[in-house]
Length: 142
Image (cartoon, rainbow, N blue to C red; front, side):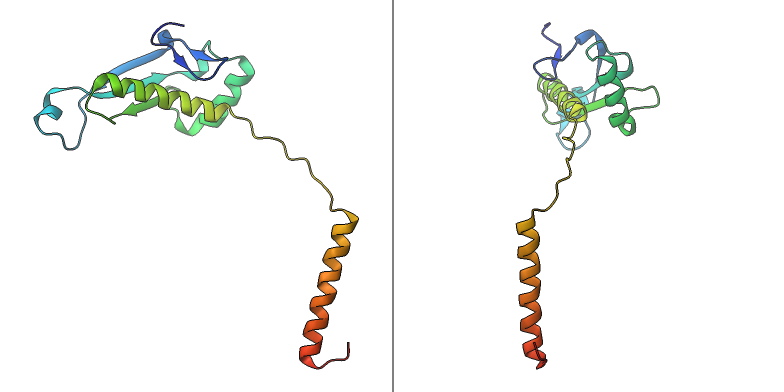
């Protein structure tokens, strides 16, 4: 693994060659530093052509990230967390890894269960008891 590769998890790593990094001036407060230092970091990664994922994982990821991709099919991640370019680059890389990790997570399939006989009986007994309480309040014969 090269120094700039982005580790998604134990098995998956995005090669540095697949990620385009650009820098820009950050907006917002910061005095003169904002006007002279390009500390904002933008990472661009194209999941459709990545070698970091198997075909099935890539298809799942593209489906899950469809709303976040640009018109060119790139995932754009920015960071302006600090005034330091290097730390912003690390932060953007971690954001990218977190986004991909979350998108690759497959929810556990729900297996339908049936209520037990005892739970059905408890529920019916509770309903009868509640009915008796209300009928006593009304003065009905129970």
